[in-house]
Length: 67
Image 1 (spheres, rainbow, N blue to C red):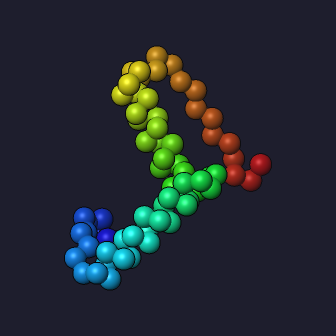
Image 2: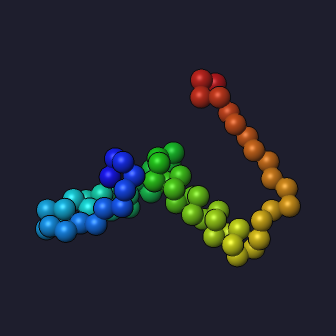
C-alpha cells in the first residue's frame, strides 16, 4: 500500500484490518480539519461541480499556519 498499489484483502485478518480503517475514516470524517473530513469535502465539491457545473469565478484563500 505504501507504494501506491491497489491492495485487496484476502485473509480474514486483512479484512478485519480494512474494516478498522473504514471505521476510523467514518469517525475521522466528523473531526474538523482531519484528512478524512477534507477528503469528504473534496468529494462534495466534485459532486456539486458535476451537478451544477464549474463555477465561472472562484476565490482562493491561503492563510498562514502560524497566524
